[in-house]
Image: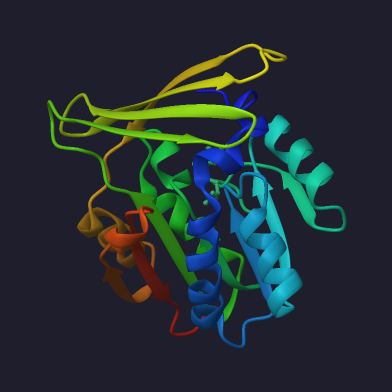
Length: 232
Ligand SMILES: C[S@@+](CC[C@H](N)C(=O)[O-])C[C@H]1O[C@@H](n2cnc3c(N)ncnc32)[C@H](O)[C@@H]1O
C-alpha cells in the first residue's frame, strides 16, 4: 500500500484515544532517555507529543514522502526525516520506538534480526527499544472497524489471508465530496511475539519482554520491549 493518500486521513485511522493512552505509557517506559528515534513514525504524532509534553529529543523517520511532508506541515519544528527503518540514522540513540504496525510492513523474506542488528549499531550503551504491532484476525475471519468525524467516514477491514500474511483494506469517504474517496489495500506480515523476541536476541539485544495488548482501548497492539546490557 502506498501511504500517500492515507497521510491525509491517518489521524482518523490511528485514533486520538490511542495516542492519549500510549503517549504517557511510552514516556514512562522511556524514563531518563534523551535522544529518541521513532522509526516508521507516520505523521510523527507520538514524537510530537513526546517532545512537547515530556521534552524528549525526538527524530522521526518514515519511508513515505507524503507522510513526512504532511507530518512536517502539522508539526513544525519536529525533526522528521525521510528514510528506511532498515537503515536507521546514526546515533547514538538512547531509545528506538517502532510503533503502530510499521514492523509488519517489512517483507517477510527479510530477516528481522538483521534489521535489529542495524538498530543495535546506532544505540547508546544500555539503549532500549520498543516495538509495537497489531493483532491480525484468524485465517478466514475478518475484523472490521468504522469511524467517522465531521468531514469523513472510514471503514477498515483486516482479513487474514494465510498463516503469515493478512490484508488491510481501507475505504474513506469525504462527506462533502470535495475529495475523492480513498481505497487502499496492503499485505501485512503476521508476526508472533516469539519471532520478534528471537530476532532481538539473535541480533544481540537482551532482556526482551512481551506485553500483551490492552484490548479495552481499541488499539490492540502487541508490544515487545528490549534493552542492551552494553553496546560494544
Ligand atoms: C501503520 S503506520 C504507523 C505509524 C505510527 N508509527 C503510528 O504508530 O501511528 C506505518 C508507517 O510505517 C511506514 N513504513 C513502512 N515501511 C517502512 C520502512 N521500511 N521504513 C520506514 N517507514 C516505513 C509507513 O509509511 C507508515 O507511515
